[in-house]
Length: 229
Image (cartoon, rainbow, N blue to C red):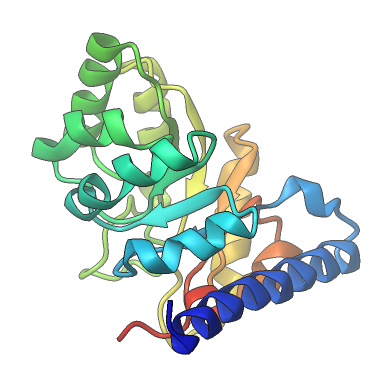
């Protein structure tokens, strides 16, 4: 192992400590218990050699954007850390549902009827039931996935009623360049009126704000792993 390898591992461990400390401070400032906030280390586009030091530092929850990348990377990692939890935080194509249900412990990007139907079929067929979050496109951005805010209630009701899905929470990605707090507050309002306990919101640049607004899951990549090469 080279000096740069050791240095990189130390950086990731130190970054994790800093992020955990910031989460704890933000939670206490908001009058919340830090133990109620799940830190998802976003390991997308980072190789196994970058994930291992995070696992060694006790990190248990990881986020991946693509089913294929996770399928290549995580089976071996899970053999060494079977207790870790894997979250899909990127768009899910219906033809990847079977693989996603087998691989992931949580899917944060349920956003349309066709996907809900396929997830329901696969969950019933496999007996495996990942935690499900409905993604809401709070900024109504045409290039982004997610149910529009004014259709979210009806979609949640359809997922529960028509498809029998156990929806645990909501997820959003606020538009770049806009104040994130308004989007976090909107997501929290939709969750509250639908009796959903979990909010997946907040990334490296705005997670403290998200915690103040009620985030239960924060998705943090660059503040832990550094910028992608």
